[in-house]
Image (cartoon, rainbow, N blue to C red; front, side, top):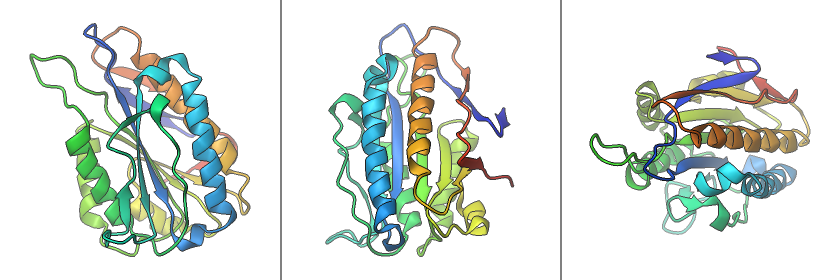
Length: 243
């Protein structure tokens, strides 16, 4: 179920065999157009997200974070995207990275890095064995059109989502969002931070923290193999993009 006020997500719930990890991936656009106040606002937002999730008793023990930045091409990293955490890091041990905006928008490289990490770092559930991780919840923040090949890695993510193996929320942010392009590249429910200044980042990251906390709370309760999670309504400055 999806509405303008929330996102319906079907995810596995806790099993009696112990605590299961809830993987959260943040794909952060660090291209040159995010320079100045936008990247500083994302930096503050990530720091606030980490603090608030750590304050949640359910999320603190279950959430593991992976951060993928894309934009600046680093030495030895010609794709321009990097998983800057060591796989999935427990939120209580996670230190927000220092973000810098530079370069183009290699979103395809970020999608490829995400697919690689999911295959490598997320523990699958195997019949007859203890349950693996819950389905990853992915937030993709980008402000511009990708400049690399993104169709194939995006399709791989869409295939995962159609098989109910991942949940993706795509967010258009920045001052010059191309909504038509955002529709083309989006995976899953899609939102726009609909302001011409940078004040929208704070309510968005608060909503993201509440979203993760609510998912963690529901999944930490005993129940059936799947559970419908009604996410908190998005704040006024976070608009759902219709297709």
